[in-house]
Amino acid sequence: MALSTPLSQMSVALPIGIDGSSRSMIKVQSVSFTEKSCGPLLRLDTVSRKLSLKKRSTVCMSLQQQASRSKVSVTPLELEEPKETPLNLYRPKEPYTAKIVSVERIVGPQAPGETCHIVIDHDGKVPYWEGQSYGVIPPGENPKKPGAPHNVRLYSIASTRYGDSFDGKTASLCVRRAQYYDPETGKEDPSKAGVCSNFLCNAKPGDKVQITGPSGKVMLLPEEDPKATHIMIATGTGVAPFRGYLRRMFMEDVPTFKFDGLAWLFLGVANSDSLLYDEEFSSYLKDYPENFRYDKALSREEKNKKGGKMYVQDKIEEYSDEIFKLLDNGAHIYFCGLKGMMPGIQDTLKRVAEERGESWEQKLTQLRKNKQWHVEVY
Ligand code: FAD
Picture 1: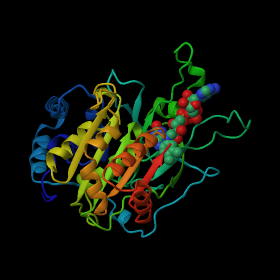
Picture 2 (picture 1 turned 90 degrees about the vertical axis):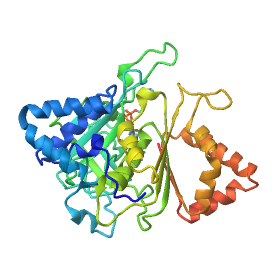
Picture 3 (picture 1 turned 45 degrees about the horizontal axis):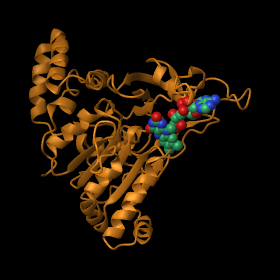
Picture 4 (picture 1 turned 60 degrees about the vertical axis):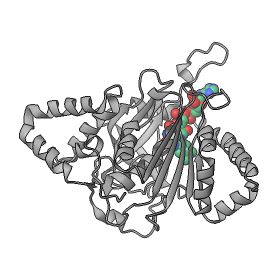
């Protein structure tokens, strides 16, 4: 299918054109993040009803316009121009002071832990490319170096260079609140809670946030071939860079990147309440079934074929024939999430390679040499 197919009105069409302002886009999008339990039609109704109080005729027109629009236009297109990746524009000694636009919990009540979608206003001063990270310096003193600020914590950027407001002025992060549980009592110990993730998840609109970067090149999306295959393996917040890729591929109208290849996302989380950006991804599945595949592994809800917990590596194994063929044909494969995900995945890939009579070591060396293998784990 060509990518001129209209996107569903649920996730994309609604934000633009409501009143033409980027802030209303953020507001409308936030409805779909927070009302996790609502079905898409209910969300649409909720939003429409709220808007209809003020601008009924505008909304109707905007929805009609949406039907004929395939993608969201973005500005400023100068963000496509630089040939060099933006890198370390702001360093820890002189960070940029940005502002929090919004912080929203994006997991349901049964999710273990809390994950928030955080939109940061950098006013266009800290441009980045999809797949890069920002550094955040939480306020306060570094306990290990009295008088000095905290160390920088890195967060993968979960939006495209245009941000969720499509105007190049914001960046979004997907942050899991780091909590500490006493191994003996199993009780939470707030005195040992993660400093930066809690600062970000507790932040309020308008709060200042010190950022550094952008940093990282390993997860940049290679765009030379718009027909390329991109296999993305994520656990939890590791989905952040892939949300950026997928918005660039399927949500935004960018003159320099007309994606018509295959994007295949494997997302591993604990249960269905822990799924991240599921509605956004499901809409791509509906609108671009030949360009997007989306497989989820819910470790606490599903069983693998051996009766154990379902992890991303079990999904990889299920589709290993296709994955190996795609890799042989030049597909890029990306891994992002907690460090602990890699050993299980590597073991599975090695086992599958051996069953196919191939040497995994040789294959991996080749994939690295061809720049098809991209890993960012933390
Ligand atoms: P810290 O204060 O640094 O604490 C670290 C851990 O130690 C916490 O779990 C805390 O609960 C525990 N702890 C604190 N005190 C004690 C104690 N006395 N005894 C035992 N344990 C203790 N994270 C995301 O959520 N989303 C991302 O997209 C993301 N992207 C990343 C990208 C990169 C390239 C890297 C390197 C990391 C990324 N991270 C991401 C992780 C992030 O940088 C932080 O490491 C994470 O948020 C924890 O930082 P913190 O300041 O909250 O915790």
